[in-house]
Image (cartoon, rainbow, N blue to C red):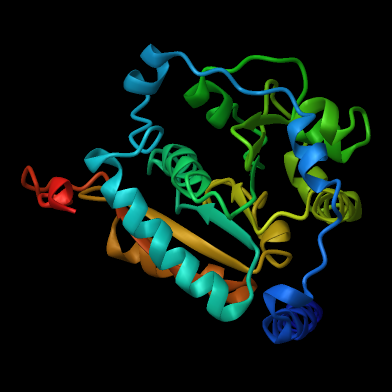
Length: 273
């Protein structure tokens, strides 16, 4: 355990050093190659069925008053991201069923409506095809195949609009923990960031208490957002999950999902603005 704690502390120090360096940079100092836009537009564009959008509650897909809760979450996230110089944001939950993948998809579309942001969304919940099913997409490979070098990211990724990219799973991975904790996983992320220069990378990661899949990955994240299910996730589970997260990365916050609230509680004056 001593060695594990030392390794975690070392990773924290390295991450903090990178964060401080990023904060020092102004927007004018960030050099983005001129051909980045062409690299993004070269990716195939995603096509979403309107029935899928309604059935899977992609409320922020087109914006409007129904997207207000996700837009509020987006704004709070961006404030912390810009203040701390973060880029990699993991979304996780104590266990499955908390709406983590649905929240990831909605946050992605909400962020995508900010024209000045480049956002990449990667599904690292390799035991499932959550985001692909929510978006109604089909294919052959998974992000594990990208990590293992079986398929390049540019042949696997799909694009929505001009500033949002998805890396999805179309098949299950039977050794996800080993894949996610490998050095090649980190090298793959670094290569993607070097080529596409995203402002934010969102990760749909496995539930914390279901396996060790996420634990080896989180130390390479800048921060994490914890999703809990209203009326089902116990305070003990939330507390335990938060403490586990804090040992591995910065905790951005906790989102209580699937809440019941009165009609108009969010955005009731939306049309007045």
